[in-house]
Length: 318
Image (cartoon, rainbow, N blue to C red; front, side):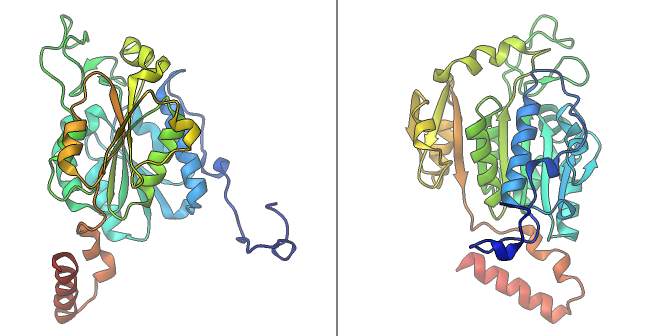
């Protein structure tokens, strides 16, 4: 019905309506079969369903295969330096709190050189969506061990196999002060991927979403069997979690009831070994947000700033 005059419709209609194609730009140059393609199309759909104005939306990335993402979005974008996506995104959000900000980062970009920025961005809890593409390898530089590579992973830096246990991004994020939203999904389950990113976009603080991603070139064997096996995933289910259509929910062979307000139980679920847990691990929408002190407060008198700070303290302590 879009394209008709508003007075021809029986319900109120927006003057303009954006389709998923309105967010697409340039042909994605990831390898055929890369999980990035699935994530990209899902983000297009989320932006469409949220009706984000492209001129009010920013995608910030660092360096890596995942970080090409801003080039494929018909929005504003900032392709930054290795590991520096978080400080750039926080700067954008602080100066322009009215913008919809997304951070796209990889397991090397976020969990290695960018780890210090990752920790503080979680603590700042500024409203943005963080998408961690985790394929457990440095793909852009052609197969070096990453912080999330499993023990025994053969790479150019560890030709006899990685010897150290991998970092757990979910467990690490849950341990950071003021964490407010932590979820996990996979690139090969489009319904769950969409529902997770959509839930993250609705959260009033920083949403951290780890996406378990396939790399068909350097890590083909890592998730190939998991993607073909419905029993490889465990769904974290709750009315306040990632809600799926009942018909889709029935396709999961393993389902665990989990209240996302329980951070201790979230940490237990993050340690699952036999299957990949997907869903909302933790959410606290009441945590303080550093962007409350952002650009909209510039130009205030000292007395006005003091009053604003007191209001903030009352909000989060009462």
